[in-house]
Image 1 (cartoon, rainbow, N blue to C red):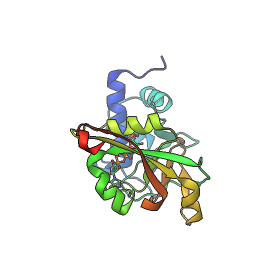
Image 2 (cartoon, rainbow, N blue to C red):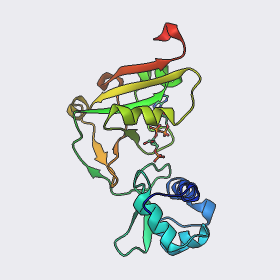
Image 3 (tube, helix red, strand yellow):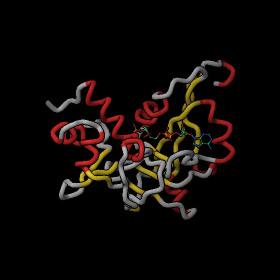
Length: 191
Ligand code: HQG
């Protein structure tokens, strides 16, 4: 039973929302490191510990982590609220990737990748994952994939962090350190 049911996936999305963006929507208090009480979360979302343990273990991206004593839980990354999840600085592979909507291209070419509503820019280790990230949003005009030169960024003094679930994060990607490598457009003239 290592696969989440539809209802568990739905619950997992709710937990993401609470632990990354809106703890107050479930009446929960979050500490400065992003932790909330497991017993309070279970009560607030009307689930049992067994279900929460299953969601933490088999959630496709390992988005959540328990404290060692299992009394607290937090999201590994993706926050919009200003918490310090004690990210570790690390050296990424030479290239990382970012997939997005074609409509963002102009602005990204001008100002680079910015965290927007989150605390960090999220980057993928391979092109397939970047496509999946881009395509989780529906776009009428298309998608674009960027390759990020992490070595150039590090030379420029930028830092990279790897979340506890392995996701690569950085504060900003300057336009000079990224290159468009693929574009899927519904407008033939833009290809
Ligand atoms: C775009 C999901 C205009 C950026 C995914 C993205 C990921 C700009 C959007 C994780 C821009 C922000 C994060 C600029 C960035 N001008 N648009 N200068 N800079 N953008 O959701 O990377 O399932 O905050 O390209 O799989 O899409 O939730 O970031 O399209 O790993 O765990 O602004 O969320 O993971 O959107 O997704 P997001 P993202 P989970």
